[in-house]
Length: 298
Length: 229
Ligand SMILES: Nc1ncnc2c1ncn2[C@@H]1O[C@H](COP(=O)(O)OP(=O)(O)OP(=O)(O)O)[C@@H](O)[C@H]1O
Ligand SMILES: [Mg+2]
Image 1: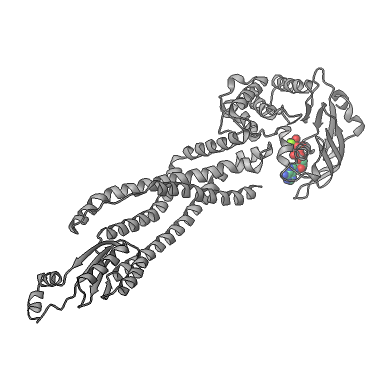
Image 2: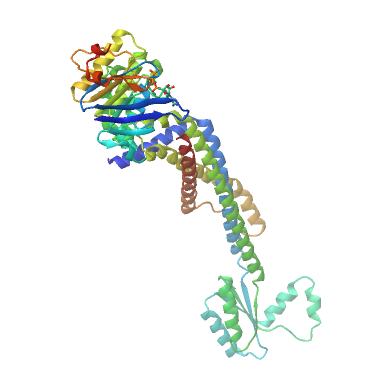
């Protein structure tokens, strides 16, 4: 075992000992850190689930391609080939008669259509697309160029608004995350300040008998990082518990909309980010505190 | 080796604790620093360990000129000096063994080696059976011996002890001085501050006598204790 490794291990052990030495203080700090990490994490997860839930309903991204009145069978086949080549999703042909029947089936529409001298509706294709808004826009332009295509209707304004909403929501979560991250750094800063005061005697003696600054700082840095990491774990637990509590009501809600949807929780990468981020922020808070307060001790 | 040349030390409040002090302690010597309370003994030690800086004059310790020693080099100077503080400065939140382990942790000795060496140091001062005792549970003499164990565990070439026998009865004081004599025998330079230096069998001490910050009669400083009293 190298001296470098054993010194860091000793620093870590020392930090752990100091954490468990005052369980109540530690528990309170962890709660504050855990909550301040859990809130942005929960927001992030909520947005992600919302995106998936809305994406699940599918019918939103629907491209209707209306054909010209004089399109014959050959032209229709030609358009269909073009649509399929785009590989956006399922392509369905809706003959004008079927469209009219569908219209008449709607409440209140039967009377209205009954008086029409002839079927005013064109033949059409409906493309159920699973693609980004940008790709859809491009496809719409391309479809409009196809021969015997009269009009292309993209039913995605709602989708665009929803995307914009998600974007703003993510920004809000990021801002909240930033504010709470600063809070975490501040909490650690103060915890370490108190720790340094509590260990003033030990610090003095260690310096007098030849401790370098690194030796004195190390346990405090590890303390901050360890506290942040544990706070991150607590945040994971809080978010996961919240998800479990919400699972049933959400499934019920989805059933009301005629679908099935189950909340997804934190993935391993997100868990690692919470724990690692907590550790990093804790380390930063400790480092700032140590630089300021150890200098003050002389 | 310790060399003081024309050292003055004035504390910020204005009191001059040392005035134009010059002396030399060769390697392997046993030296007494004596003088009444307030004469400047502790100040002299603090200057040797670079805990304080001289107001003027030069100090060389272990071949290093302290004036040119940067902040980063300080820890390494101190690791080669065993310091027994007047007020001992034991850590009361941990047991005797843990107190002795601190200097070894500072130099980064792996835990197993450190424990072996700490126990050996406790053994040397006769505290092996009190290794797990908390300092509050130790008698005054035992605390003093613990402070010595902590000072010597890193095997320093120079041992400074500030009033190590002040609060002890005669027998205990003799025990403690016996420990210092052993270190002196194996070549460690030993410097002890005391207002009451005693003869130690088999040791020819150097005497550094201070009075209100001034060195007394430098000619006598190499004479044995009896001559100075
Ligand atoms: N940190 C300090 N600030 C200001 N003055 C000090 C400081 N330390 C010591 N002094 C003064 O310097 C003088 C020498 O003090 P020092 O502690 O060196 O004496 P000493 O010989 O060790 O005394 P004692 O035998 O009582 O321990 C005293 O007058 C003391 O008041
Ligand atoms: Mg003194």
